[in-house]
Image 1 (cartoon, rainbow, N blue to C red):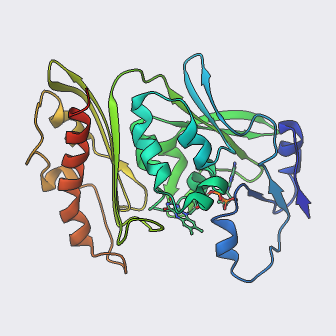
Image 2 (tube, protein in one colour):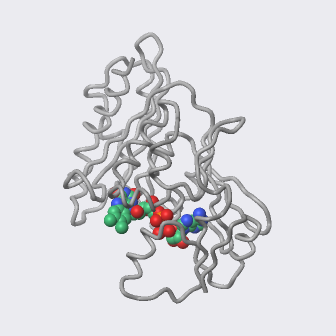
Amino acid sequence: MYFQPTTLDQAVQDAQTERVRILAGGTDFYPMQGDRLPDVPILDVTRVDGMAGVTRTTDGWRIGGATCWSDLIRADLPPAFDGLKAAAKEVGSVQIQNAGTVAGNLCNASPAADSVPPLLTLDAQVELTSTSGKRLMPLADFLLGVRKTALRQGEILTAVHVPDVRAGHSAFRKLGSRKYLVISIAMVAVLIEVQSGKICKARVAVGACSPVAQRLPALESDLCGQGKVAGLVTPDHLSTLTPIDDVRGSASYRLEVLAPMIEQAITGCLEQP
Ligand SMILES: Cc1cc2nc3c(=O)[nH]c(=O)nc-3n(C[C@H](O)[C@H](O)[C@H](O)COP(=O)(O)OP(=O)(O)OC[C@H]3O[C@@H](n4cnc5c(N)ncnc54)[C@H](O)[C@@H]3O)c2cc1C
């Protein structure tokens, strides 16, 4: 069975179908299927009216639940979104960016999902819709673990909401074994506000170094009041991270690269006019 609704009302009704699997770009779903055909009903949300695109709201920004990476890259957004756009440009290849969606990246809940650190620095919330209505939840609460989210059966991630962010510069750094088509060994997103040459607000998130990407609140607080960051990131600041050894890199390598990655990302923001 394959549903391709064009209205949200129809989509939430279709989402009640037993064992239904919601699908957007399919760039995570189909590779995981291997050469097996799907054995569950598929609900394709890419044609649902109003689900794709980035729009201004009264209190921030709305990234629709079927917005692909390329739409995000082209959207007219303030500099605080530069980190998220930089992440988007490094997801797979242009073909993947044209099909894959931000929502799919979140719902797939990979520790190496590139959208998560920048969206954490933007204090993003997810909007989950079902026949019972809509609920909003901070992204940090939505992601529960490796491939685990708070999404209930029958719910669709209909949008990602970002509260108003007028000030600040942001950056994203991804370390992989090559430049393109690469899964992150480690990644860093920062959002920095500066007043009179000193950092007055800092948000720092790290991905691929714990089951779910994390903000680093102790570092964020120590950054405030600083004008330079060289040598500022200490092992204590990274103590909540639990990187693993895998084919892409060892845990100790991941921890070692983080401090320079974070410092470079922040320095890039400080150099912005
Ligand atoms: C060659 C290649 C390179 C890649 N490179 C990267 C990379 O560099 N960085 C990276 O982070 N990822 C990468 N990916 C993974 C993938 O492209 C991204 O995670 C993408 O954003 C997934 O979006 P999608 O729309 O294709 O998700 P889908 O495959 O359609 O869905 C993924 C999961 O989310 C669920 N889902 C999708 N949309 C919704 C919704 N609106 N509501 C509820 N559930 C939903 C699906 O049921 C499924 O479980 C790559 C994949 C490939 C094939």
